[in-house]
Length: 249
Image (cartoon, rainbow, N blue to C red; front, side, top):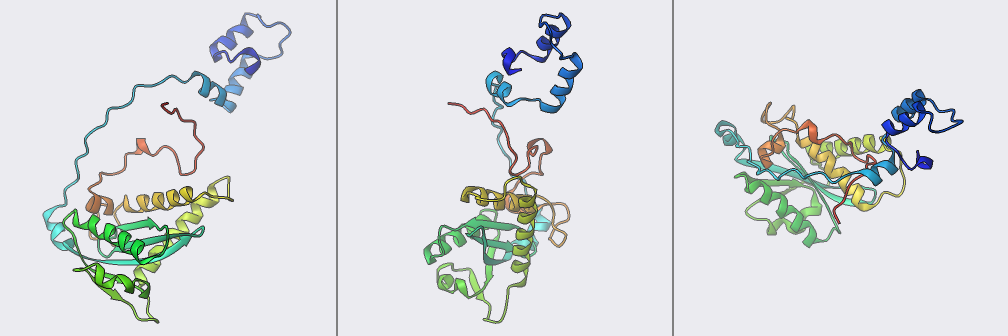
């Protein structure tokens, strides 16, 4: 195709049928097979793609929590811990009963950064009218105990563990390894890709009702974030897929 100046498939077929290319061994069937195997060709996409009219931005209406359900989740307990993925530290949190997970990439493990990320998580629940009465964590969080009031920080003893958050961390690591093993590249992941992977996993876990959650029909993302169910038309590409995009200058 490149040697012919990238004609369309119909134009190429016409060249063969009209015998305008002498001594060619290519048949129309060859063109069809090449089209099925190699199309869409990247040079054709980059050279011939036309600008499409963008879809208008639609206003988003938050899903409301049924009153009967809201009475059971007005007060919640949050479990938190740290995890590392490709040497990137993350703050992981999950509410009991609601089963809503949160993950925040950490620039460092300083007290100020820890406090900032913890408050942002608590504020997200408060914006939906859900009060975080208690935070369950290990002794790493002791330094912020008197700075997140009125929320109570319950620090476990040295030989104790916050079981539910440890199970959740293990789930996140398992999901990340599954996606990682399916990608064609395994080395030299940039930080932004590692962060994007963990945020993608959290978004998928929150998008569906939990088997042990407070609701069998509403997902954690709907309860805490007011999000509607996933639209299958908007998840056509898996994480890490190679794609050709048009970018406005």
